[in-house]
Length: 258
Image: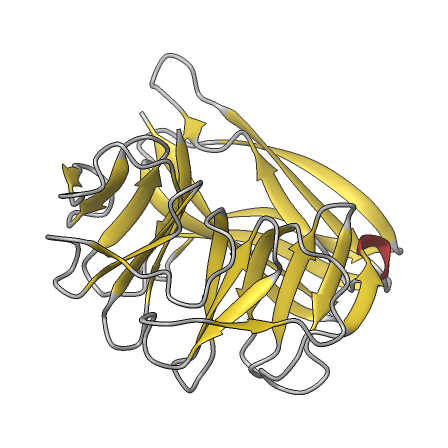
């Protein structure tokens, strides 16, 4: 089972594989090679590259593993962590790494993933399912129970709680990954929510930033929307889709296999 991708290092795509460690592709996801010496059987939940080109792998039950040679070898890096169930990573503009855990909230590393300090001020949830860093250095953490925490100031604590329905918009797709063959072109279901009405568009892009499809472009009242998009022939590899509205833009990754 593929749980996560990282594309931050040019020319390299990393994939975390549950009970399979980490794999890497250097040709836009067409071919994959193991990059998991020492973590072959780890239940890998997430993979993340830092500004220093260090690769971090988050596992279920064995914590964080760290590679300083692009994934050729790995070593545990759990100093300061109080749980070893890792669900995701995020990085701010100063290179600080945030890790989400299932059991003890969010931790921060200021030394490129070598040690961790808990960021617990104002956070009453400890079962974190996802984490993301925004361009303004605000960190979002999603928790069990459909709540989201965010920093009230850039990359400090995580004290403000909001329900999912209060966020400006959400964006997702199904299935994941997308499997499309010449004889069976897969239909992808995109879902998004708008808190404010107005013009909105949903576009699909390749790794070079070239638009390959516009799923929808119209004016919508507030609400939740679902759109089906059939994958065109010949598309495979890693793609992005972006929802643009009055609230801003949000981008997600989508892997198309064939």
